[in-house]
Length: 485
Image 1: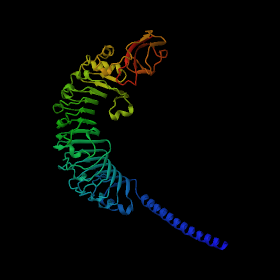
Image 2: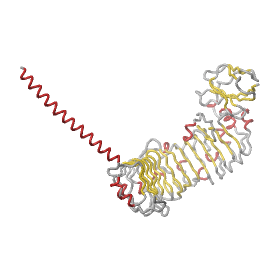
Image 3: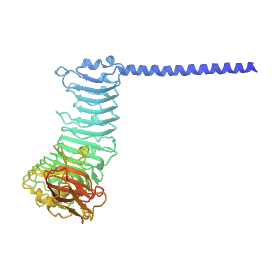
Image 4: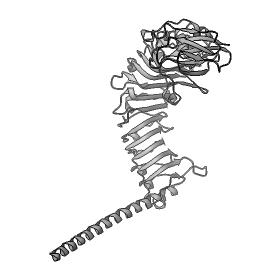
């Protein structure tokens, strides 16, 4: 019996030993492989800046096995300030991933076929040359900026194989937005077009999988673009136009909602008239010499949700259309400025910003009257032909719609006035908050209101108190004026 047990144990020991040796050899192979990969990757520099053809040709030997770099730059100038002599990028074939790609090269480079294995780029800035024919075969790029050749009319053949653009794609220079690009994107995308007056179709640069409601369009000195998407568009995420009013927007006239609309440096507004838009998130008119008539541009406008900026417009005479609009109702947040949630002026953020419109008289604006009462500390009106801010702040305004009506602050009393120590207010609905604003328009105190408000720590003078409930977004604050003695 013991003999058989000995044999079994020896067999098990032998099997275990063989399995352990097999496991150890496999483990050792993986370690050696990882060390080899590490050693190869250790040869990759963080940044590559090529100054000459010799430096390009030496890449595979100088950095053997290098496939990924953080930054690759090829400039028109040699590193010593002279034009470089690079004629091809053939020796860069090992590269498959680049964080930041800068190609601002001279016309001596005949083609960029050496980058044909490149599949992933985080940010690409490419100044194309007319001789380049080999497309970039990128599986994914985060931000892509493409500059057409300056000395010829070129097209987008170089970008025709790109599969995915995750955040932004922009085109600059006089070029044809063709052939139609064939890429997908994430949930939102920025499309920019600048310095282009060639007849082009916007649908050629749209992603395959995203509607206009998720696209941020920015045009700078771009003309003659047909904005026919090839399908009906009900809303736009954003449309920014800087010196770019001479485009065909006819297919967008039925859009009912625009998240952000900006018109800057416009000399004419003829092509923009009669948009049927009813709802705009943020509306900006700035530095326009054209006769900007808001009523002609947006005759159906009913609501501005986030911010209004009307500044430095030479011929804007009226904002009467806004009297029929609901006020913004989202509190501006400093972290949301880039999302058009407020207008930054110095260190202050404003919902409403009207400044330096030399033909504009704001004294009779019911929209501003309501705005002063709701946003006394986040509204700026000044430098126009005539402004009556103090009058508007105390004037009885007309509500634009039933959405702004509320009975929450219809009946209450406050005393004493003048106040020395405490101001008593009753009755107050639960959740009422307050802001105390001094004569300079600066908030000096805020919080949730109980049955009294202490003025003991404030200096003597006149103050405005805004009472509001943040849970009722369409309710304008009630404003009262008190004197501290």
